[in-house]
Length: 288
Image 1 (cartoon, rainbow, N blue to C red):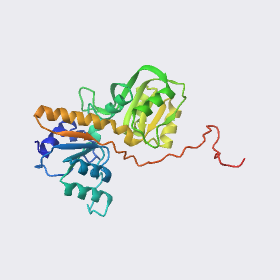
Image 2 (cartoon, one colour):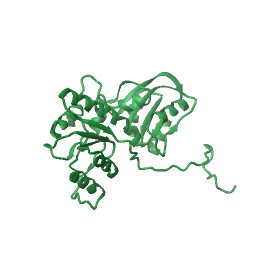
Image 3 (cartoon, one colour):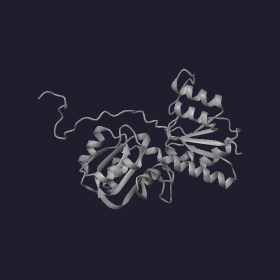
Image 4 (cartoon, rainbow, N blue to C red):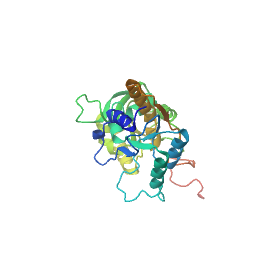
């Protein structure tokens, strides 16, 4: 059986920590490097329900995309949300490892998995890493569909390709507009509108789009926007990462089982639909 330190080395080869953004917090959060690892659970968020799933399965390591502590802290007391996570992990002898923006920049990385889930062929990075001589690494991906399709049909394809969430997929643009060239970025993507415009794409699939950047982008260039749940756009990476670690384990002769958590950790749990008229802001219940 490999030690935790061995598995960390394998993960660092897949997602080198130097590829992470300077503000990020990646790598081992808790765990004894000398502990043996037999089972590894992959999840987007290091939250209590995921940790409890890891305990119930008998995992030795949890690999998440999102950091537990992105900013400094002065306490890991179990009285806090994050402290409880740490205490549960340590008591169960489970390590926690984070691959965040280093997994975004990897080749293959988070946006490659997102593109595959949406039926897109990757052409190259949206925001290339200047340190990559091959020009394959970076944040986001520029992709294309096999054949053009109307935006409405593509939006349905996006919704079908992602795990279901309460909020679904928000769409901006003419539903009849043909879509062929597409930019994708797993997670929050409205900081990449300049790159999206430069890429000359027909549509941009990402998450967490804010009102003003989205409105400005729609006004500046005729780009269709598809805004999915943050968790949903990053979840496809878990299968990819699990396969990559399984392949590394086989190369080393390790017996390591992997599992992808299907627990929905998106914070939005319900959606209340309302009658919609694009021409009027008056509430449907208003007295006319």
